[in-house]
Amino acid sequence: MTLRNRSRGLLTPINSATLWRYTGNGNPWVQNAISLPYMFGDVENMTDSVTPNFRKRQAAGEKFFNNMYYSRIGYQSGGGTGYQIHDANNGERIDGQTLHIYIPHTGTNALVSTVLLIGSSEISRLASEVSTRVLNDRGRSDSNLWETLAEADKTIEMLRSPYSKLLSAVNSAAKAKMLGRFPGYALNGVSNLYLAYRYGIRPIINDVQGIISGLKQKTGKQQKTTRAKRQINRFEVRAGSGTVGIIKVDYSNIINDTVTIRATCLDEVVLSSLNNIGFSAKGLLTLPWELVSYSFVADWIANVGDFIGALTPAFGWNSLGSCLSISREVSNLYVPTGTTCMSGAYTLDRSVSGSFTTTSTSKGRGPLAPAALVIKSDFKFDNFTRAADAWALLGQRFSSVFR
Image (cartoon, rainbow, N blue to C red; front, top):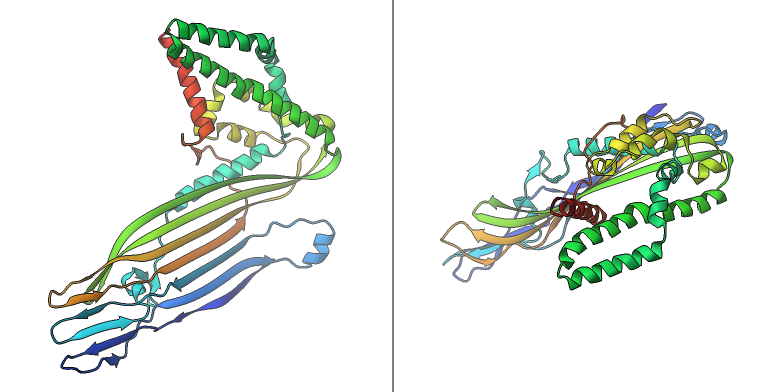
C-alpha cells in the first residue's frame, strides 16, 4: 500500500475595510489605503492508503481497515464594520470587516486562533475506554443468561407472590404514615422497591425480550460486527480583548468542542440458537465478576468489567479486522462586547461590530488502542439512572445504620 495525499480549497487575504479621515473646516472625508492581510476561506486535506487491486480483492471477500486522516479548517467573517472617532478638528473611521484584527492569531499569515477545550490526554483515555469496550463486547450475546441462572434463586424469591408483596408494601406505608414514621419508611421502602425493579425485575424483562429476539436470529456461519461509541462535548464562553492603535475591543469567544470515538470489530463466527439467546462462552467466563457484590458500583467509576472482558478470549470468533475512528468538531465564534478609545482626546462615535468564526473538522481511522483500565469518561452523577441507583443504595445504608 502507498500513501495518497489530496487537498482542495484556498485561504486568501481579504482587504475589505476602508479607512476614512477628515481634518475639519468643512473638508470632506478622504479615503486612505489600508491593508488587513488576514486569511479567509476553507482548506481540506486528506491522507489515506491506496490498496493495489482493491476492487478485485474486495469482490473476493477481503476486508480493509486502512488508516486515514481528513481535516478541514475554515475562517469566515460575519460582516460588520469598524470604529469611528473624532476630536474637535479631526475624525477617523473604518468601514468594513475589522473585528478579526483584534483577535489572537497564529503564524505569519495571520490565521485567527482556534481554541480547543479537550486535551490530547483525555482523547487518548477515551480511545482506550472505547477500544476496551468493543473488545469486551466482541464474542458476547446481547444478554447473559448465565448470570440470570446463577441468581435464579434470588429472582424467584423476588417474583414470588408479587401481588401480595405489593399489597403488603402499600399497607406498611399506610401504617407508617398513621404512626408518624412515614419518612423513615419511605427512605427504606422506596429504596428497596426501586432497586428490586432496577436490578431484579427489569433484567428479567430484558432477558425475556432477548430470548424472543435471539430465537428469530440466524444461526450458522456468518459475519458479526461489534461496535462501541463514546463522545465528549465541552462548551465554554471566554472573554478577551485586543488593542490596535488607540482602539481596544472586548470580545467573547463562544467555544464548542466535540470529540466522538467509534470502535468496530468484524468477525466470522458460527452461531447457535443457544448463543443467540444469551449463552455465550465469554459470558460464562466473565460470570464471576458479575456475581461479585456491588461490582456494578466499581463499573460506575472505572471500566473494570470491560477490561476483564477484553482480556477474556472470544472462542470461535475469527477476526476479519478492526479499527478505531476519532472525529472532532471545534467551532470558535468571536463576537464584540465593547469598544474603547484609549485616547482621551477622541470621542467614540461607533463601536466595532460583526462576528468571526473559525471551524475545524477532523477524522482519523487507525487500529484499536490496547485494552486498558481507565476512569470512565462519563463518571458523573448527573446521569439520572446512576444518581437514582446511588440514592437508593444510600437510603438502604442509612436505614441499616439508624434503624
